Amino acid sequence: MPDVPMSETAALLHARPMVPQIAHVRRRRHDAPDAWTLELDMANGERFLYAPGQFNMLTAFGVGEAAISVSGDPAEGPLIHTIRAVGPVSKALSQLGVGDPIGVRGPFGVGWPMAQAEGKDVVVVAGGLGLAPLRPALYRLLRERARYGRVTLLFGARRPEDILFRQEVERWRGRLDIDVEVTVDHATDEWRGHVGVVTNLISRLDTDPSKTVAMVCGPEVMMRFVAMALIDKGLGEETIHLSMERNMKCAIGHCGHCQLGATFICRDGPVFTYARLKPLLAVKEL
Ligand SMILES: Cc1cc2nc3c(=O)[nH]c(=O)nc-3n(C[C@H](O)[C@H](O)[C@H](O)COP(=O)(O)OP(=O)(O)OC[C@H]3O[C@@H](n4cnc5c(N)ncnc54)[C@H](O)[C@@H]3O)c2cc1C
Ligand code: FES
Image 1 (cartoon, rainbow, N blue to C red):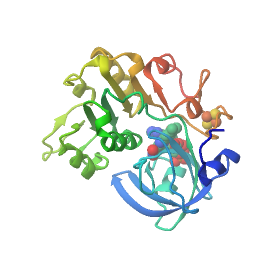
Image 2 (image 1 turned 45 degrees about the vertical axis):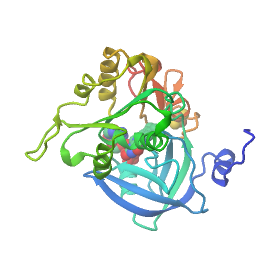
Image 3 (image 1 turned 135 degrees about the vertical axis):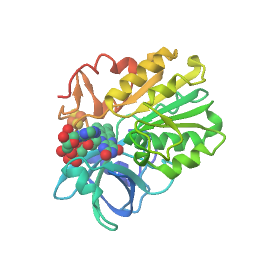
C-alpha cells in the first residue's frame, strides 16, 4: 500500500473493487447531437480523484454498467463524463436527469503520459468523441503550461455540428499558448475551416519529432492512420500514445473480456504506446 492518505472513495474501491459507489447528477448538458455530458457529485461529498485518461465503470441502475472515460478537469470541480448513446447502458446514462443516482466504480487504468511529456512538445489528436478522454490531459497541459513545450490540438469531426465541446474549443483557439486546428469530413456552407480527415493536418505540423509526445484518441481506424502519419513525420513508435476501447465487464483484470493477447486493456491500458499496440491492432475484438 502506498504511504499516502487515501480518500474514502479510493479506500472503498481498494477494498471492494466490484461495488459501485453512489453519485448524483448535478448537471446534464447536450454537447453534440448524440453526446451528453454529466456532472456528478459523489454522495459521500468527496472530490473524485483521477489521472487524465483514466475511466470509470458507470452503472445505470436497473440497466447495466459501461466503461466511460472521465472528461473533466482533474484539478477541480465535479466528476464529469461525456457519453455517446449507442446502446442500452449509454442511452440510460445519457437520459439521467438532475438529482438522479448513478453508480461509479473506479478510477481504472493507466492514463496519458503527462510526466513523460514534461519538457517536450505535445501533439493531441482527437477524432469525434475521442476529444472527451483527452480533455483532462488538455486541462492539465494548459494548467501547468510552463512544464511543456509547444502544445497542439488537432481535432476532426464528421460535420461542424458534431464538434464536441464547441465553445471550449473556440476559446482554446483564441489562446496564444496552444495551436488548435479543427477539420470536418463534410462541410456546410457556413464552415470556413479545414475540410478532410484529421490525418491531413499532421503533414502541416511544425514540431521537432525528437522531442514530441503524441496523445491520440478516436475510432480505431483513425488512430491507426494518425499513428502512421506521425511516424512519417519522424515520431518514434514509443512516443505515440493511443487510448483503446474494448468491451469491459470487471475492469480489474479478472474476466478477460477486454483481453488482447496477454494484454488487458482495463488493467494495462486503456492508454498504450503504438509500439506496444501495433502487433495487437490486428487482433479482432474478442
Ligand atoms: C476505456 C474505455 C473508455 C470509454 N470511454 C467512453 C466515453 O468516454 N464515452 C462513451 O460514450 N463511451 C465510452 N466507451 C465506450 C462504451 O463503454 C461502450 O460504447 C459501451 O459498450 C456502451 O454500452 P451500451 O450498453 O450502451 O452499448 P452496447 O450494447 O455495448 O453497444 C451497442 C452497440 O454500439 C456498438 N458500440 C459499442 N461501443 C461502441 C463504440 N465505442 N463506438 C461505436 N460503436 C460502439 C456495439 O457494437 C453495439 O452495436 C469507453 C470504452 C472503454 C473501454
Ligand atoms: S474487463 Fe475484465 S479483464 Fe478487463
